[in-house]
Image (cartoon, rainbow, N blue to C red; front, side, top):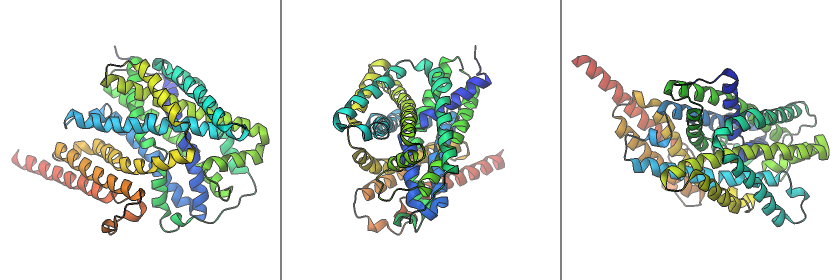
Length: 433
């Protein structure tokens, strides 16, 4: 018998989804982007919101519409294609970049400034952080209760205090706009939003939420769709509030020469609340990053355990150990190697979401899917090679090439072509009826 979620449980599901998304990148990148954008903050912030809020919302909607993750979205093609795409996304968002970054940023913004032996303290902190994350992830059926009803409300209260402080604080000073934001701040904000990785995470989290709903007895697809849409809207609203306040913080209280948004954030909190504020900030960051790490470990382990004969719990431990190793790199090193990977993969992920949402209106849906994947993978590779420093001047004529969006127009044109084909086929069917 199919169950339904009560309103309070639905809100808890939304809070859990918000907490899963709100991790390391969601805190450091909008703050840094706000400082660099300076007087161009508004268009840059709009671009950032489009990719860091709009795309996760789009991703959860796509999962809800397809009734599952990448495998469902690509079911018209050979199963190996869906598996390959899923594995790439899960590795990036899991043990390679996103999950280790949660522990690394939590350490950078909580204990690093007080440590006299950073190498040893970073290792010790990582062991404790990922040990706790793994412990919580070992019991996926309790995630909604432990995170959605307990951890997230506390996190939201602390973030609201920070947001109010930013809006009421005096002594604002806008730094000069950085060069990359002078010409096209909207486009730069769009690309900056990639760094949160939430568009990729939305596909994973959508699958995880559906699995949690099934464990709660909600097996009817229409009910799952309703729950997932509400969770997506609640999470998107929360993320938008956080990003807007952090953009204002960066733009109004920037630190000249800051290496990351974390440095700006710690400087602001220290100036407003002193040592007590720094302790609270460390708790906020650790809590935000921990909830995200739990979600990432759980989603990755659940998927990989379905591919190979290794249990979910064993994969939780394996992924946690991989995260532990990567989390002991320097933050700047982790960010530097993640950027080319993200700009290469994002076009494919976004195109797959758009296809899933528009599939019912496309003619020849199988050919449309194959075409959009080929085009997005090619231009994603172009963007990745460009970030790595390869000379691709022969493509410089393309719209958006200079700002990392050369893929957008070709992919949209592919979808438009198959949409027009679908309308033509409908008219022909009507005429022959």
